[in-house]
Image (cartoon, rainbow, N blue to C red):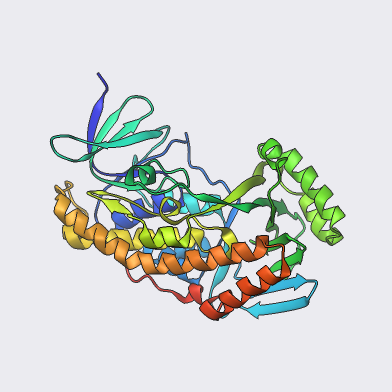
Length: 401
């Protein structure tokens, strides 16, 4: 007979969104348990850009000031292409963080034993008598929960149970990594991008010595063979950049990169029309972060959107549960009807925001991967009409926790 447990709130996935959701609930006096398949904290993807909207959330979670000490403020976004150079000066806060710094800050704010490692979620089903969700773990453990929140990323078990369609693939991939300059890199405090054909190479300083870089390009069949080997990723990348005549200093940056930090991933997305029509909650089960709205990295909002989800979700749950920010001796019984009302409000509040983000990211992805000039022109015109301020998404405020 499989061992069984009962928990008030189970959060599936201990990435950025899962930990942020647990921390937001904790700040509202609501306890939760995070089940994470990895054996320790995971921070795949090297670094993450955080715009002003994301920093507002980090301040609400109580980790903003700590994280600001780990990343320099960026003053501009500089783009260089065959058409010339353009500069957009940042009027609001923009920094690039090591994902490990963000993950650790969120985890350190949680009570001990909130996160259970080595717990892979295989399935979700409902108890026939109580209609409560049951989380099935890989070791045979069954956890009967009053609430389940899926923060388990692109291949979400929870999203699958809700009936959401699998994420689609762009014909693009992203390579990411770190390069450390022991004597200082000397770069300006700006996000620099250079574009040649269908390849974009970007460089973002994190501090005076560490630089995060990324490459966006078309996916090739060879990428499946090299995606797990740092040295192969680096060597093939250098070869392709030399062929496309990228600047020598940028190529040298890749050559000196930390092999352990390198990742190569096919880019995926949930289509805007699926966001509009999707059912993101059922009963006492919902999703957040990439499980809800995975989008390409083209506007730099995937991570921050997940942070926003955490604050809005915790606020809605606390309102329906009577949370007032104080610690509770015992977790009160959560009534399914009230949880459903909280989830309904959460999804209504988030849907328009993530619809706009997903649409802008989707169109930008189509623009990057388009090969015909007429197609590029049409997509660009549509972007400029629908999103005349390309950085307008950074000014959004999801509100107080």
